[in-house]
Image (cartoon, rainbow, N blue to C red):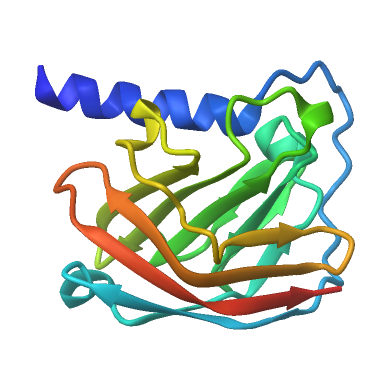
Length: 180
């Protein structure tokens, strides 16, 4: 039963990020996106997931991937988005971070959210947070230092906290991701 509750929390946070979309647009992700930045990690789970994530690819207008244009998808160098679908080439080591910052026009119940999966040596670690904190994000606030600025094309993680949906361990993220 506890595992079902955890899975339901992930589904709910994903739905918060995804919203509803009837778009049939299957345009490919822009392969010319230049991404600069590394996210430093701290916390108990770094023994398993490592102490940094180097962003190699991005889906800057993640409407086809997530269902909302307020989100950006950060990916490792071996994972791309094509026709709104994630295409990994290294199934043993990868990460996908969906970040979103909503405006009043988005009519979302949260201002900001993160849903993240890190796969290390074939083992999957899932994390979430939202601002303000919600039960779907295990009542974990992302923090005031997290922002997604799609105009400046910059994502800032400044003592941003996410929670492991299985172990409830907190992971802290620091870094600035710039993209074109």
